[in-house]
Image (tube, rainbow, N blue to C red):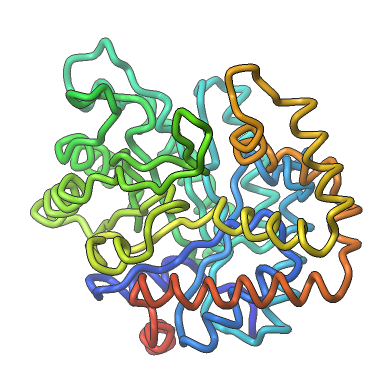
Amino acid sequence: MYEPIPGNKIFEALHDHPTIVMACNTRVTKGIVKGILKAAKKMDAPIIIEIAKSECNINVGYTGYAPKTFAEAVKLVAQEAQHDIWALHADHIGIKKGTPEELEETRQLIKSQIDSGFTSFAIDASHLFDTSAKTEKEQLRENIRCTTEMARYIEQNTQGREFGLEVEVGEIGKKDAQGNVITSPEEAVTFISELEKSGVKPHVLAIANGSTHGNIYDEQGNLIEQVSIDIPRTKAVVKALKDNGFNVRVAQHGITGTPIDLIATKFPHGDIIKGNVGTYWQNIFYDVLKTHNPVLYQKIWDWVLQNYKKPEKKDLETFGKNAKYALKQFFNEIYAMSKGMELALESEAYNNAIKLLKAFKSEGYASEVRKLL
């Protein structure tokens, strides 16, 4: 009853509703996932639990998880939390070269994700951008080819089961006046148009619109807010997609550090249908760990600085940007956490998830998904 549902059911049910579905990449599952799912149950909100290729793959990513072990851990928590409207999303299935060898490795990863029970997938071939080409179609040719091939592979191997599909354009590409890569409405329309001509119909499009993954620091190494997301550009991309008859909405990546009041009052809810929150949860984990197990926290701190310290970077920034790589290294010690710490993580995750779900205007929308189901 509490197994993950197909991601497309969430996106289709909420099409053009003024809401954003929160997609949580927690990296650490214990305590945090339960707090999030309990908050979603309380708010009757749909939720997505996701993890990226770099974090969780066949060889075990930097979180210490493989697809099967991650899926098992999250499904168990969903049963405990008793929340029924959630999807399990394979985020950032990255393709950076497009070689036959890389595509075969990607197929193997996708097959393991499907077999493990993932119900939504994000094909990210956005690095394959030809800066020397003259037209959008030529610039995006390799992205289109690889995305199409992988999307067809997912369809063939899900054996008739429905699934959510996210695609991406803009990791590398055209730059604005400030030198930032930014997705144009024309690129988005060309990309989705060519995919649909090939029989691939994505539900969600990740774009470059000024966001940054992870924590952001100023020149003095102080953690700062992210206020760089280009909201007018985001609206323009969605308008162009709508005007051309495409039922595709935007996935907003890199929300960690974005002020909650900005999400609540400025984000175009509905134009953005999926909002990724990742490092935010990792920050909560380390804050709680520092209080409940200062000895382990210090061990992780020392390990991160020993392996990732750069002379020009402050220690806080070094830790904030690289602490994720310690999760695999200290996996057994982390998951031997006390019950008190687990409950503290659950409480912190619950309280923060409630705030975010309110900002995303998600309350009550799980019921809309149930109607479609």
